[in-house]
Image 1 (cartoon, rainbow, N blue to C red):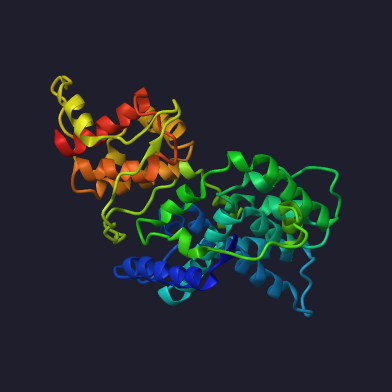
Image 2: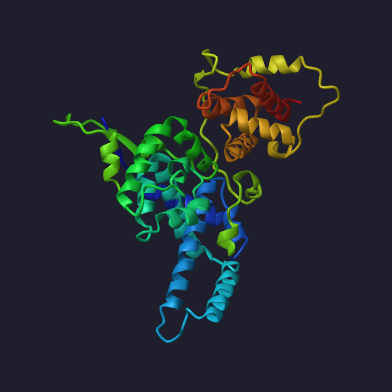
Length: 370
């Protein structure tokens, strides 16, 4: 079996995703600002890839100005004035739907490529760096890499690679082999798209049967062959990003959710049973505690948010927010537990009787049953 990339599926998916998001945002607004882009979708990586492209366009505009043979851009006064002008310009991002939609579509495609094949993605990024400036290029762009950044961030400020680009490409491939087991699950990363339009990984990565090769090659060899402005301040911790307001995005109704077998860290196999959970939580004394009103994300205490992020969601605050918003869209406790079973419990290997799991499920119970 070999895996083939269905580029047609990805292109169509990205276009549909961009159309949905832009249709919702621009139904009430004419322009989008830089801060709007940072908060645009639940997929932080998609948002930052749009910002990254704007940064590249900003640099291209600066290069055009400096290319004029009639003015001395090396003069210190001119340099300072130009820098101030470009910084002011970067804080005046103002994009209409026709310009934003293709940028968003491209960002979605890049995010999927990064999630599924980080080696090729980062090797391609390194290939864009000016000769002899790979470290500077990576340092300048690191703020825009939100997924699998460990694959490439170790190269920054590392000596020994010199200016040989091929050495950097080999180092990325080799480092991936060492850390790949610790990287976040592809399914969990792509789940952040689900509130807009679910991504079908099986439709994108198609398994095909082929005749066995006469001389198998190693995976590493194949990978080796692959190839203060607004932008200074845009490096925001994912946990600090405020996501879109509930009314801004139209969420597609999910298909019927069917509980799946979940493997927990204690080795037991099973599903979270909404009937047993309901029976257990009904016996607890709530001491006057009222049911949760509004959104789950607004009901978490700071210590709960920290604990759930660290223990249940693999340190990914973005994924926790996505999970809470998805649960908020459910119509019943049973449906919510089904969603938790199918998307999170198995993938993140939750231990069903662990205190953080029970505390999280109790919050879900209180939302729907109390």
